[in-house]
Image 1 (tube, helix red, strand yellow):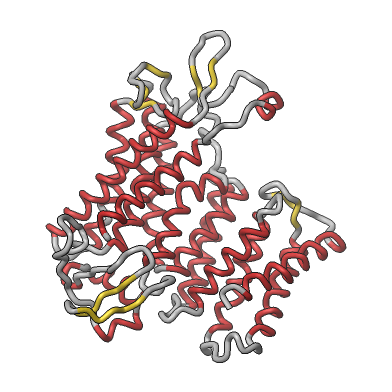
Image 2 (cartoon, one colour):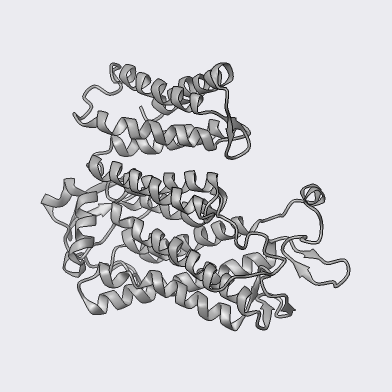
Length: 437
């Protein structure tokens, strides 16, 4: 069903929305390049519900759990929003992938997030992001993408996991207001975050929550010689010391994997590896927080570094560059990056009941967040395209001296700043996972 159902959504709902929008819609909107309509969105939603009603009568889902219908309207809204963001044929990729991920969690062995939590978060996120859009902190497509991100975090994990990304988003806005940049090279300064920026900074975080939580794909509970072990798709074993978890975060773990709570999560010893952080804390929480620390560290570093305009040097070539240039580092920006990573790392003290464990996790998250910021600078120095001013000879990330028409016709960047952010988070996630496995 995880293959057939998403492809059925693509085959039925997407063309139904297109046909209805073409024939009956009088007004259209544009989020990501293609024209869409509210008529098409509405038809997509109701055709999805009809498809679900027919699908549940097939042998693929012989006994759906009784409350499954409460989740389907929100699932339909999410997929309609995904279709609205799709352009240039990419919705043919996005829709089945998102539908498969949502369907997997809906039919997983573990329980879903409570219906009340999901709809409450969906409503509150809608109101909050509408306010951010009105304040120009987010673009229209960025607001829709951020709403999908918030719903996805709760759908795949737990509502409290919104705290790190909310802390990142709010602190980034605050830092931007306190340290406004007017450098000509920073074309995105003072503008709302679009959907690409939203997922460049939050996409890996959502992906990790989908993969590492106890009801994720490929999760097994193994009875080993040491007791109960949780085996996930990217960790050999998840190790959780319940004595080191604070009450709130223990609730997160046990509610996400409530179907194994009765058998207990025992303290395990790792004796076959020379070095591992696993005995101290579960990667289930460290890895997503470390990734968010990378995003926060990079944002703080960039904003403060551009504002202070101190001596800035290329991190790879060690030569003087203009403040704000990708790949450049300065003392003020580096210190700000360390503080940004530490802010996300400080959440470790809410995770743990033990001060020593909390400090260890704080240090790990802060360290990898800071290293991810440096990696972002290295990637920017090596792979992000630079433009030389024809008169001064100075390099900038964007050709701000040209008009918009000429800029659009200029050579494409080998890597954009958003791609650099995404890749640096992906690499640091892989490094932390390797250490915790």
